[in-house]
Length: 230
Image 1 (tube, one colour):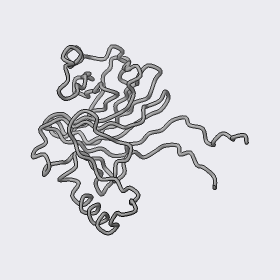
Image 2 (cartoon, rainbow, N blue to C red):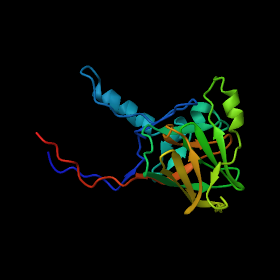
Image 3 (cartoon, rainbow, N blue to C red):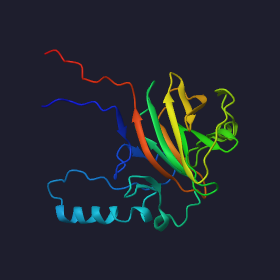
């Protein structure tokens, strides 16, 4: 009952990171609070949940901090930060929709890159490069080599942009009929064809950490639900 409200945009960062998963590389996400089964111990379940949530920075590969930022972590569980971390949203980016965020860029320390499907969009100082995200233990050598460090086929203008060192930089991906259009700090940079592989995600490379804020999904969605005839 009541009136349904369709939001103009959706915040994609919450404490439990609902809707996100780790499809390619080993990783740990925050616990999700689920309904209790008939024989579950409610008090113990809550205690275990609170304990896990209090140590996310040490034990989770990706987590939301107290300021609502999406961060990489996992020092206690995995030892060091010297491996790639990939996080993907379960819902594809539809045509006309936009996923955008701001990330803290500290050269050679804190860098994070958008992904779409299995394609990483590496935001380098000298321009965008593409990388195929190979599944652990797979035999995708040919595809991986062909798309490792490749420039986008469809740059917009000169494809150049400026990154602000030790500051927040804005990235947006807009869904197109065949892939995404990429903008960095308000400037359209390139279009990338991905076919039907359009689930957006995030990647940190070896020896890099990630810090993201204001991660949202928006689109030209209807303002009201269509009436259903009885």
